[in-house]
Image (cartoon, rainbow, N blue to C red; front, side):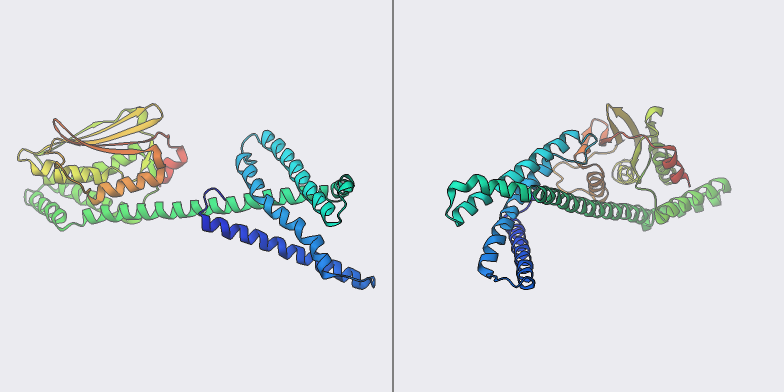
Length: 368
């Protein structure tokens, strides 16, 4: 609340705290005035304000210390026993500081330093319970604001993730609606029709319609790797119609990683790049390889091709790759990485993300 704020934000927070303290002091003084009026007693606003304001301003000054304790001794951890004990000790210290300072103030105000002990005893017996209530009220306020801020952060993150997923769908859809892609696909279909290969014509049209339907209807944020591969295969099968003798596909996907959750449509833009910038630029065609491996607590995905590789000195990534990086960063933060490199046989893009197996319910949602 305070450590992450800028200097102007801290000044604003402190100003609000002091203003609240002054307001509460004014309310207390007003109550004392009304009580005096009802009892027909004389009342001095100056004396009333001097009696009320210092105590509340001091409590406001102690708020940052309570917030610091609340931040370090979290009560929302699985085992809050130590945190509760820490807060009880801090609450006692909070009360002792408040009452001691006010006893000093009263000794100074009445010019009677010899009776400091008496003033301290009066403060302790009169305000100890109130100080505990104020302390826990500050703690509760801190957690309420902290939870509200965390909820807002999650809402923003979820919104950004949904926007990224929508962008990925639009990019995939745009690739399928690309005039060259549609022209070549439809041209291949017409050639098959002229040859009387009705089975492959039907299969190609089915694949194209399914691919378009999935990208339009939407997908979950994450899907099992096996189903992401299935979706990618539909795209590759259409591409094999365009390059019947030039495109080969190899898969190295062990069964123990096929239930791992991956972002939906994470492989399609990488495969698209491999086809457009790899296989299609070589006379004899080439091979695209899909690999997956579990590396401890991580999952590594690779899309490699035998094309000419990445251009040397390139400083700008394509839309598909940059969008993939952005989505992975939003989903997994610093627990992911994307690397691009040229190998002896062409280009290779590697993705590393946390390994998490899909549940039966999540698999059913995708299949639904």
